[in-house]
Image 1 (cartoon, rainbow, N blue to C red):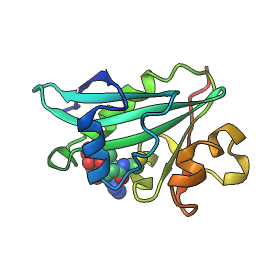
Image 2: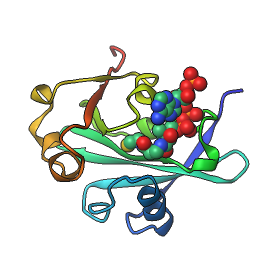
Image 3: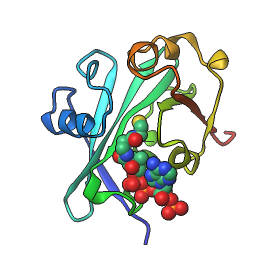
Length: 147
Ligand SMILES: CC(C)(COP(=O)(O)OP(=O)(O)OC[C@H]1O[C@@H](n2cnc3c(N)ncnc32)[C@H](O)[C@@H]1OP(=O)(O)O)[C@@H](O)C(=O)NCCC(=O)NCCS
């Protein structure tokens, strides 16, 4: 059965967001900064299953802070949550992300690894990529279907 989730926008100060990111070893240092939008994902059964965020970078966007709570993983909910989150991206540019461990997961969603040399300066300048994520993190870009 296809999993569905509903997104509810939450502020960067949201305690559940911070706890979930911290528990998954994802950065929390910059979640209160301007230009980020975060969502709490709720399952059909009404349970909070995880969080995801979008950071605006000039005309492009960074998908970030993607976390599914451990008890809800490997049920297709992460994929459903990311699909919903991508619907909320308002820019017409590219969507990037940085990950140290979930490259295969994001590949199933249409992201492909790209070299840092082709990543726009505004994306490289985000705190996620410039200072928080290790330089060894994989950067991926969403392949959007032609419009
Ligand atoms: C990565 C994460 C969000 C995946 O969430 P999930 O709900 O378990 O993912 P899904 O159940 O939707 O998985 C979809 C597919 O990806 C696979 N997958 C999920 N996580 C994976 C991982 N870390 N490595 C490889 N494959 C993975 C699943 O097996 C599944 O494959 P299938 O359809 O062939 O069975 C979750 O494991 C998580 O929160 N990890 C910690 C935080 C993190 O690493 N976030 C990403 C960095 S921003």
